[in-house]
Image 1 (cartoon, rainbow, N blue to C red):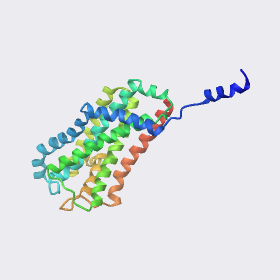
Image 2 (image 1 turned 180 degrees about the horizontal axis):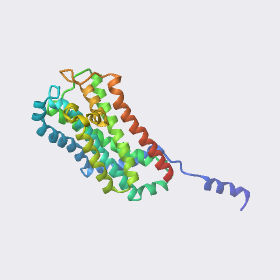
Image 3 (image 1 turned 45 degrees about the vertical axis):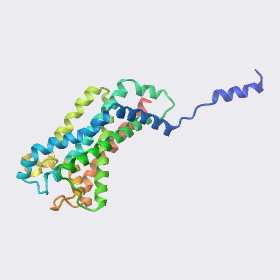
Image 4 (image 1 turned 90 degrees about the vertical axis):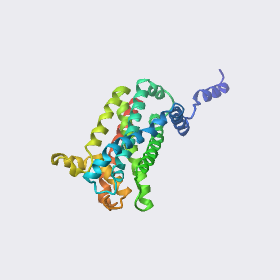
Length: 277
């Protein structure tokens, strides 16, 4: 081979396709969103908050109205737990999806492609965000039907929706890590069913802390679900003024809980994906 013909050959062998990171992320995201719509999975995201609202409100409304919550209605008081349960339901689906991708070997196939190792996780999170927004919208409509109303400036209403979304993102990122580590869809689902149930029951989501036994009240007040509920109630407001003022002293603990979950989960996500790649 002459020197004149060697240069084109070298040029051809050194040419490489340049991966379009944004396009890869978009294609993988659509891969998760479209089946959720066509198979009816998104209907579950709509029905779950409705089920939570009915399950909490019908058996507890009269009892808690008699016991007293300090709010204008029990619907106003229990709205945060409906929002949190909707976010937790999305998180369980997120963990199941992550575990399924691991056990099916899909993540290993992605690792062999010219793709940034975090793109599959980013695509899952985008799809989780889509399902979560649908669930939170259904939750807002559900609690509105039973009597919840926003009392306060528009900035508080926007803050309520953004804070609920932030909590859902924190739950979903943490659940994605758990599903990636567990690598078993069945075990992951079973593992994530109990924590939301236990923390939800032992929180101020359904009843004030004063109605719990004295020895457990400190835990009930300070655990993350209760702190999230305090923040959402303050942003939602109430006609009796017992929801709390939207101040940094009230909002800092729930914001710190959400930030801590997100930061810790992101660190784990980066370490897991970089180590595997």
